[in-house]
Length: 103
Image 1 (cartoon, one colour):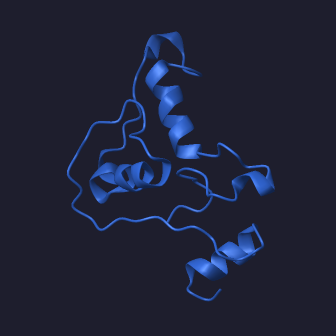
Image 2: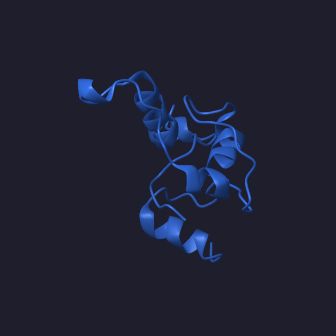
């Protein structure tokens, strides 16, 4: 579980000023096109082989609707998924309660 690493935005994101939220996707895009990297690194895609094998990229794809830029396609060996909050509070404490199964 990675708290605060968003993989796409929920349908109600606009109500909270979060339209287009996708922390993971934006990091992948920045790495794929070489943004915010020293020139000596060039364009290097995000390199997360273990998280990819565990299914993070597949979960992100299911949530956001497309494959994140620059990441290779791998067959996951782990179970993966994503969740959308059901509580009205979009804060850390209510999110933690939901992740624990106590909405």
